Image 1 (tube, helix red, strand yellow):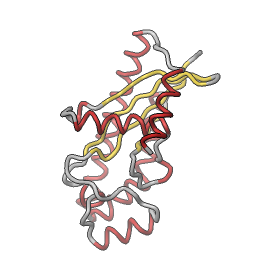
Image 2: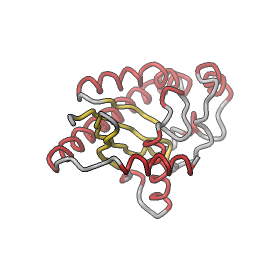
Image 3: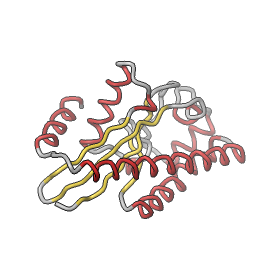
Image 4: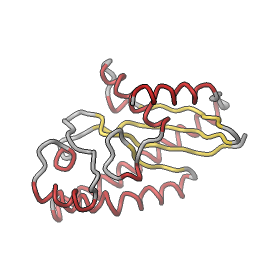
Amino acid sequence: MRKLTVLCWLLASLVSYPVTADEQQNFQQQSKAAIQEFATTLKGALVSAIKAGGPTEAIQVCNQVAPTIAASLSKKYGFDIARTSLKVRNPNNKADCWEQTVLLQFEDRKQAGEAINMLTFSEEINRDDSQELRMMKAIPTGEVCLKCHGSNIAEPVQATLDKLYPDDQATGFSLGDIRGAFTIRKATQQ
């Protein structure tokens, strides 16, 4: 997979070129605000669900509420915002070639000692007749995340995961791992 991702990265970098500093700065500021709002809103919904019914209820939030939050924020900010990972739970969140490359770079940067909360990457991509600005920010695995994403998942939680996500890959994480990333894409004028 790493070879395919490197190939995708090389192809993307051949057709990338920088936007103006103002455009890039504006995009990054809006992206950071959108990511912060997504993370805060989702975390609040997850905490409420866990208090109300435990981790099984939190799975329902990720399944039903998270996509609604993403759609609402995408509309509000005028770009697509989502979550992705190298090990997805929801197949609709599968990382594209560019996202896979960035996630692997995040892993390398983490191994080199960079803090997960500092792992972001942004660039402009120019492909065929389209241009877009892209940004990603890593999502760390916290203690509460391990109830649904760890190695020792309780049976009722696992049963709910199996029912909602039969092809689930998003388990086996440890505290402090990169669980995935928020990802943003915005079409620009060429």
